[in-house]
Image (cartoon, rainbow, N blue to C red; front, side, top):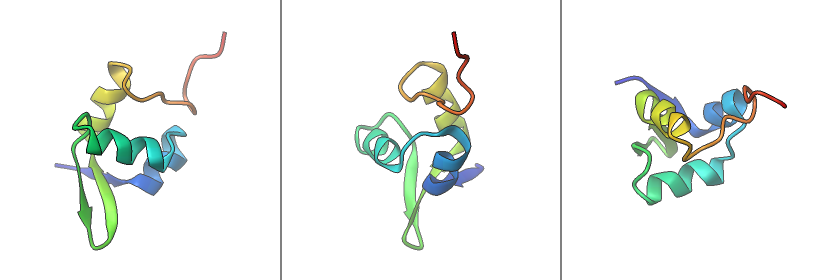
Length: 63
């Protein structure tokens, strides 16, 4: 499975690292620590955004 670092999530989607780590801790997001960095599974991240658990701030439609 493809993975993305928490830092990449923040840069790409505008979701803070704290939000991502909280979602992992709550079991809403699949992630693991690899060599000292939190990594998130892409499909899990996109699903969390799709169902509204996390907000894609960089690509959100503005009213």
